[in-house]
Image (tube, rainbow, N blue to C red; front, side):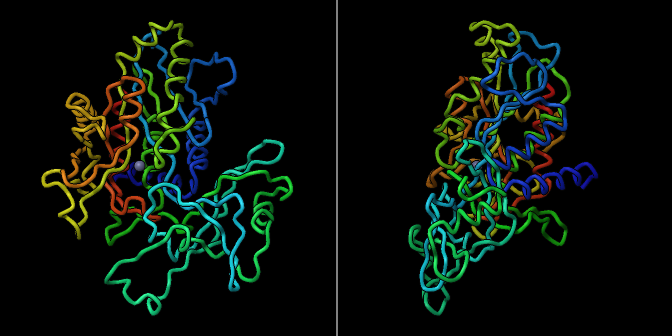
Length: 423
Ligand SMILES: [Zn+2]
């Protein structure tokens, strides 16, 4: 690995470790953007700043790098990704338990691999909103809770018949011993957030695996971490935006929330966040409504979300000839039924960006007898009418509490995105 790649991976590791919730993924992105001179704008203000900037809405972020030579109808080069990952969320009234255990009520967020949450030492992170309406982001990077698996002696068939988990019955973590009392969790949370428990109104809180991201293997060629899907792509988008050379186009990254639950929200890819920001950027440069649509007509989008690498123990689950390998570059994701937005033209454009960046690329197609996942690409393409390609770093264990990918691929992705922005 080159020195630049080594630095990149250690920055990605620090991004992952400091982003245990989607709100923290936004904060980690903001820190990097601010350090590169990007200015935060408020959606409620009148915008006058035409330089590099960003807006934050909930756990979503849109950032842009304007070229001084760009005109009112300059196209946008957009990279989309998502900040959220499947996890367990703390319910509003979580205090419960029995038989000498204090337990937390949790709700499953997204399509989590439930078994992967068992027997892990879990921390708590997310957003706390106070009675006065102000919000505080909290991350407790200590083992607070654990979902204990049933002993094999009490579940004799588990290895032969598989593990069945009832989401309501079997996922409540223990987080203390003794009798549970209403207000336990709020009292603990107040102490962690440095606020009076009486001031806490509501929260959006995730449980997360406190194990740090790690390079794995005798050759350190793998990266294991929580939330690789899709904080890896968020990191690559931010890295590409802050490192891209100036160009005629306006480079934009859109890091959406709620992809794992269908994207239909104010801060999700099906909402108006991206189109609103693009329209305001056009207006800022003096474009009227027609000018905005002229800008869109020449724009393009790369939707970056991880792909499935071929699993060595299950190669038959993958389509022959379209099985992405780790450390062989980002995969272009193709689905004729438009579960991915890729078409021949957008795929060829991404291929050219990879070639300019001297980055290898691969292709992913699902088997006809396997349902194909989807992502934000078709949603933004539908909303904006912008040609879009879906791409992603190949990984294993997607939606596990701890996922695995190649250590080189995030660097390849960032370089390809940077080349796209520099066109
Ligand atoms: Zn994803």
